[in-house]
Image 1 (cartoon, one colour):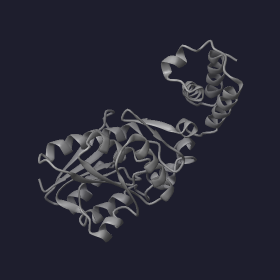
Image 2 (image 1 turned 90 degrees about the vertical axis):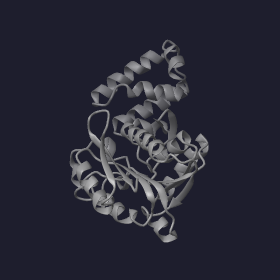
Image 3 (image 1 turned 30 degrees about the vertical axis):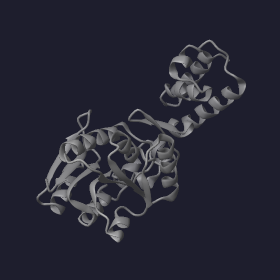
Image 4 (image 1 turned 135 degrees about the vertical axis):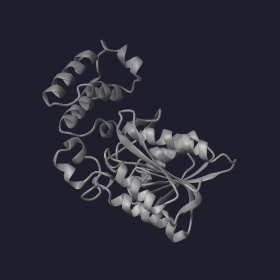
Length: 285
C-alpha cells in the first residue's frame, strides 16, 4: 500500500467513526519517522509492512477514543515537543497563553536584576514549568505534583529539553508550607472541570486523560479555594499569581484571590477565542 492509499483508508475509516480524519496523517507521519515536508513528498512511496501494521493499529485505537497524542507519545507546546502519556493531561493551546501572559507580567513587574523564585503547582507533563524556565533563564523554577509517575515524566521532559528545574512531590502548596519556603511567582493550571460535566464530555477525554487532572468538585472550584487559602503562607511580599481557569469561572476565582489578598490588583485575561481563561493577581506592587 502506498502512503496516499493508507491515508485514504484512514480518512474514510475515521470519518465513519466521527473522528478527525487529519489524525491519519499525524499518525502515519509519526510511524514513518518523517518531518511533514518529507512526508508530503513521499505520498507515492510504498509503506513498509511493519509501519503499515503499526499505523493501522493506531488508527483503530484512535477510533476507539484514544487521543492521537497518547498514541504517538508527544505533543507540541510553545514550539517544543513534550513527551506525554496517560499519567498526564495533554497540554492545550490555551495554556500556552497562560505562559505568554505570565512571561509578559514577570518582565513588567520585576524590574530589578536577580533570580526570581517560581513554583508551577500541579505540573503534569512539565510544559508550563519547562517553558517558563527556557523562555526566561533567570527564573529559579520548582514544579510540584501529587503523583509520582507524573513527576517522572516531567523530569524526563526537563532533561530532554535542557531545563534546570527542581521537582517536588506533594499536595498543592503543602511542601512549601511545611518547609517555610516562599516564592515570587506562583503559576498553576489546576483541575477545574465540574464533576457533572463528565456526562456530556467526549470519551476521548473522560476515558483516557487522568481525572485527577481534570475534575474538581461540584463547581470545579475546589482546588482554587484551597490554593487561595494556602497562598498566604508561601508568597513573597511582592508576588505574581497566575491561574488558568475554565470559561465562566474567572469571576469566582478572581473573588477568591481578592478575599485572600485585599490590596492586590486582580485581572481577568481573555484568550484568543474571547473566553475568560486566565486570572492574575499582582500582590504588593
